[in-house]
Amino acid sequence: MHGFNRGTWLIRIEDVDGPRTVLGAAEEILDTLGRFGMHSAEPPVWQSQREAAYQAAFEQLVEAGFVFPCSCTRREIADSLAIGHTRQACHAGLPGNVSRWTAWQTATRMAGRMRVPDDDAAILTFKDRWQGMQTQDLASEVGDFVLKRADGEWAYQLAVVVDDADAHITHIVRGADLLDSTARQIYLQRCLGPGHSNARLSAYARSGERARRKTQQANGRHGA
Image (tube, rainbow, N blue to C red; front, side):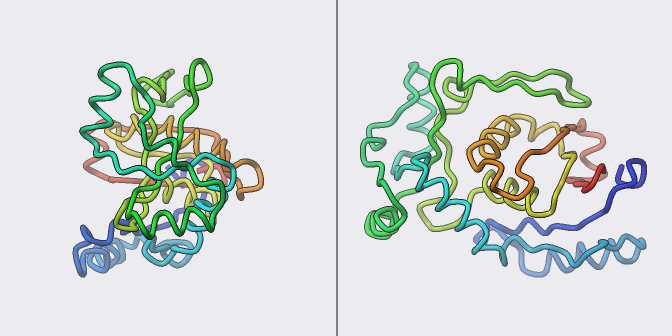
């Protein structure tokens, strides 16, 4: 796809989830790609080395009042959504600035959860190149979602939004199994605002299972 659109092919190692990272797997991937002549136009980006970038974006969202500490489990959130509730009791503990957040999170070991809007503002619509028009109500279908886990690990949603922006990605191509994440990522882009480098992406495409097996993720920059 990058060649068809005259874009740039880049490699990103998505090892943001440290406890689940398999030692040596990334190096094996890079070696395999190299044997097929597939070399990144720039040095590969390792999410595990981008702590400062994720922290900066997180602090921006905290200062803007989008993030709150939460001890709820995934099951509790799912049960809350099932009965029509989109807010948790811990939402009242929202710290107002980064220093208060840091002290709170360190003392309580809570996760940092992103607040989604209410009513019509929660409804996001976008066009996927292969899946067509998509609409998702973040409040009723997703709920407030985690950006930083209680164990200190960064969530995938925040990491990929920051990485895509910093790499000036213009077209996102991922497996159709990740279609459900798109609205959350668009919402994060909007909340980070134009001051976050190139935080607005222009096109999405979610491939089917058959294509996903060939390439788990292909990102293109500058028209790719």
